[in-house]
Length: 420
Image 1 (tube, rainbow, N blue to C red):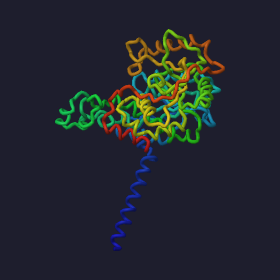
Image 2 (cartoon, rainbow, N blue to C red):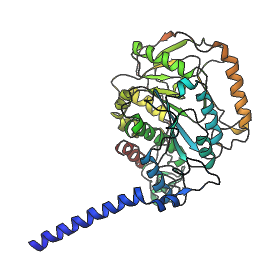
Image 3 (cartoon, rainbow, N blue to C red):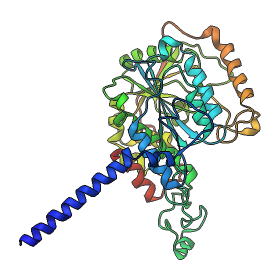
Image 4 (spheres, rainbow, N blue to C red):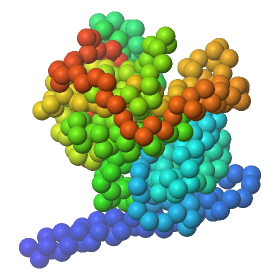
């Protein structure tokens, strides 16, 4: 009996010591840190404390976890006090990403030093690269927190959630997949196709950064305002922050859940800058620049299963499904009729910087955006808002799902983001 008790005590002691050693290695072993980050060919104050994950995928994963835990706040010594607004940008990384991020930063800066000094900019990065690093270090008008999406394809290139060589090919018939014995043979989408990692990552990343912003960021703890969620391929008009402030007041009167600076407009019409509308969530119309409160975030987490199992690889259509099927009331959106966010063209052959490829003509893209801003400059900064349309709250489910999200592994990973 005594011998058994001794064995249990020894086993417990070994377990505790082992865990302590793991924690020490994770947080305090500086030699490992230096091996896990990319050494850049120049010296900056940031590089001395923060770097890009580099090395094997396993090493990069560990480095990204460490950086996310540390939550380094750049420019903190210059901008103190409670944040008045949180802006979260989903940065894909890779070629051209740095140029797109510089353009977005330029548009954020246009709000003026009095506004941006209390701005917290969170950059959630998928693919680490030097040009994104350089773009981030050039931002000097607000506090910046770079974080890394820990399940990106860069960190899992040959295994789930990346593209596992043993996974089924997209167009492989299900019966052939079963005979072949590939990993996900039992889980094609609604259209008989198997998952493509490059398409699934966007929905995963969107939900992860939503959860990480509201639940994990120490700088956001206690923050009671709105968080504005953007994509790196966007450019804001100079009165974007002015409009957000007016819309927050109007939103309280209208009982809305979301603010949208985006929207689609008829090219033959030129909406008045003060005009806004109240409607239910429409995926492609409202997704470009949305602001939400912590209260809405908690409501969405209550519908996590609906979001994560809906067979659509797009987060915005999945959100529309949640709005129509799970929430007590459909998502009510206050949106600007004159969009305050411009989107970079999606194709390189358009002659300007593309969203997904190299940004060889970023100067051309910059000039086109600035021309549009100059065209609108005399019409911006309205003193008040005018609600020109109030639509009834109706369930507005997507007419059809887009598929690409039938794999049960995606369902499980998606729902696990809220437990991390």
